[in-house]
Length: 317
Length: 296
Image 1 (cartoon, one colour):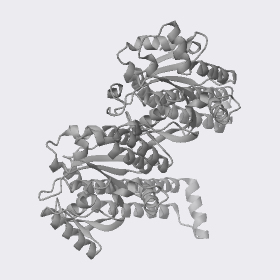
Image 2 (spheres, chains in turn red, yellow):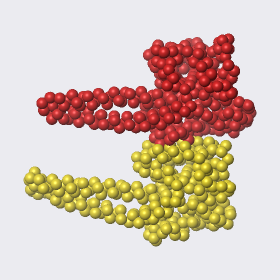
Image 3 (cartoon, helix red, strand yellow):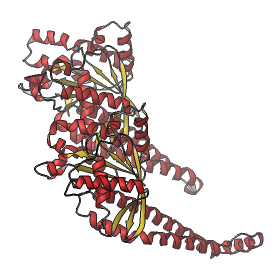
Image 4 (cartoon, chains in turn green, blue):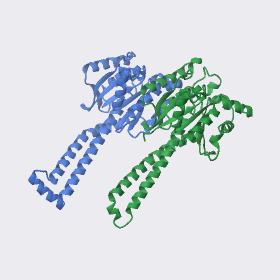
C-alpha cells in the first residue's frame, strides 16, 4: 500500500486553513491509536514544527502566521506503527484565490489540484456560526465563508467525473461551542445543501475542530490545545482505504472464480494446474492485504465515530 | 550493533552516557562495560566522577562515536558502537553536515535510545516542543524496518520531579502505541536519574543489547533450521532409486553424493548451533534483569 492521494482544502482568507494544517501535523506527529503523520522531507518537518512552536510559544498578534501569498504543495506520509500506509499531497494556497476568476494563476492551480483530489476539506470559520442564523444571516454567512463558491467548485469536480469525499471542518469551534452542535450541523447542511441531498451520492463528514478552547476568550494569549484536528485527514484516508478494500475484494473474488472455472472438466485441474496455482496465490495475497486494510479501517473508524458526523447520500451513518 | 542517542539539547544525553559507563564498571548480573579506546574510558570515568560529586558535563558540541564491548563473566560478549549527537543537530536542516549525518545514522542505527526530559514533560506545555521532531525522526528510523530494532525511551532528571509515576509516560503514550503497532520495534521505557545516586542507567544499554542478542539467536536458529531442512532433503533424495543412480553417475564426474551433502549440512547446523550456545546464558540473565522494567 504505497499510494499517494491528493487532498485539497477550500476556505476563504482567514478561515484558518494554514493553522489547521499546522495543528493537524503537530497532533499527528505523535499520533492516535498507532497512526502518525510524517513528512518524507525532514526539512519540511522542521519548518512546520517551528511554525507550530511559534504559534504555541508566542503571545500577541505575531503568534498567527500571516496569510499565504503563494501556493505550495506539501507531501505527507500517513503511517501505522511508523510504517507508511499512504502518502498524501496537501495543497496550501492564498485563501483569497477562491474568489478569483479561473484565468488567475492561483485559482487555476487550485482547480487542477481539486479535480485530481480524492478528498476535499472545506474550512468554515466557526466565528460565522457563533449565533443562530436566520434567513438573511444565512445569505451573509454563505458569502463570507465562501460556501456558495465551494458548492460551484464541487459541482465542477463532479462534472469532471470525480467523486471525492468531502470533509466540512468548522474551524475555531471554540467560539461557537456554547451552541448545540446539532443546531450548527443543521445550518451547515442547509448552506451546503447539494452535498446532503439524496441521490447526490456524496460521502461527507462534519468535523468541529479547535486549536484551543481558551482561544475563544483570548486568541492572542489563550493556551493552544488542539482538539479533533486529526479527524479530517483520518476520514479522507478512511474513505480511500474503503475504496481500495472494495477494489481488492472484487479482484480476490475474480481470482477465486477464475481458479474455480479452470478446475471444471475432465483432467482440467491437472492440465491447468500452473494457472490455478497462480490465481490461488493472487487470491491469497489479496486476502492478506484485505486483512491488513480491514484492521486499519476498523481502528480509524473507531476514532472517527466518536467525534465526526458522517453522511452518505444525505443519510447520517 | 550501532546505538544512537536521540534527544534535544540539555536533555542529559552525555551525562547519561558517562553515568551508564561509570556504573557499568561494576558487575551487574555478571555484565560490565569496556571502552575499546583508553582515552574514551578516561574521559567517561572523569565525567562520571564529576556527576557523582554533583558536577555535570558541558553540552556536547559535535557528534561523537564510541566503541564499547559488553563483557559477560569477564569475557567480551557483545561489541557495539554508541553515537552521541549535539542536541541542536535535531533541529538542523539536512543541508548541514551534522543534519545530513544524523539522517544517515538514523537509517543505519540498529537501536534508538530516545531521551525525554521528565521535568519538561511534567509541565505539559512543552510536550509538543520536545517530542514532535523526535517522532518524525523515529519514523525515519523505523519506517522500512524488516528486522528487530530496540527503542528505549529514557525519562531523564527523574530525581528533580516530585513524583515519578506512570502518569509521566502519558504525554508520550501515543508514540509508544505507534511503536507497539510495529512488530519489529522492541520497546522499553525507564525512569533515570544521574547524580550522587544513579537510577536506571543500565537499562537502556542492556535492553538494546538484549534485543541485539535475541535477534542474533533468531537469525542463527533460522540458519540451523535451514541447514537441517537441506540435510533432510538430501537424505530423502539419496534413499530413492533416482537419487542412487544420480549418486553413481555423480561419483564418476566428481560430484558429492547425497549422503555427503547431507553430512555437510549436518555439520553446518552443528556449527551454527554451537554459535548460539554462548549467547543463551547472557540472554537469559539479561531477560531476568529487564523483567522489572516496562516493555511496550
